[in-house]
Length: 432
Image 1: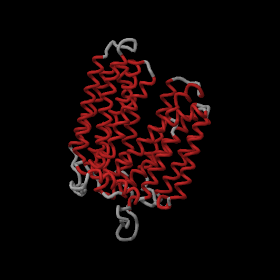
Image 2: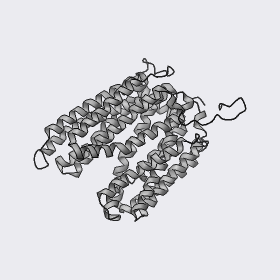
Image 3: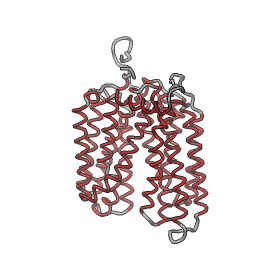
Image 4: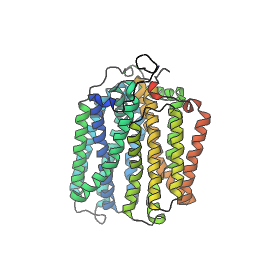
């Protein structure tokens, strides 16, 4: 039942920042923001350094592979771990582990001074790959716990606004982090940038360590077989068809509809622009997401969340097709910003749905499967984009991806009435 004002059946006024009154949530947001900044800094610096050391574009593909594989393999197990251990401690341990990785990258940077692709650059790059493998493993082990931790620090009735705030914080970090990394690299080199990365992670560790969670979440029984817990996570998805439909819808949309992997081709060959324009195009989706975040934060929770998600994913597909057909830089930027804005709505609905429709003691496992779906779609989507462009051509491949997104929305709306009829998520409980 919806809470009322003075027993008159009137919903309480929307308070978009009410979760910020909780100290634990403010610390959680601070930790999330700092670690997102750190990842953005590291991603830019690793890319530039590996390219300088190898001169081989394929080496940049290995960077993504090193980050993806360990995380993909360990994520299902990490979900069970998040439901058995203290999530705050796992988030803290993860930050400490990533700090150690940053120190290793500092050491590699110091050792590689003066080394180029013509010297022993490729050999030095292998040490970076090793550090990234370790980072991918740490992220895979701790991301489900860090994500589920957000639901422990606020009452369930505040989850919708809390998730909107933390998604906004992540998007802002995703915009600032890469720019900060590129600026630091240009001013002080790779070593200075990795030191900044490490300092940001230390700040995140301090913030996570200061969190005090609400004593309401029951973790999984330690007597339960470990891998049976993973199976239970899939069982929740099968029982909650609206969650599975939302995850599948997001996966297919990103798998086929994403155009980010092909942005260099669009910037150079279609828009006839340089790397500066490419940087602006890559920023456009995040800027659109941040703008939508500011707008949504001041609105009440969606009264018809399922319809909002279906419309937003359809908008993502339409904007993707518009971008493919555009031959003007400003118009391409607008369409990319629209993809980010639509994706933001989908992300908020999906994350809120997972949080409020999942029993608290199962949240780590279901969150891990959520991360598995989305992580897979991002990585495989980049591969699909390149393969489709080779087979169809760049513009037709992106149009095809947008059309597949629209087709998926239609199938999801018809085949999953629970998702289509999904109402106000703020009022949902796991046992509804």
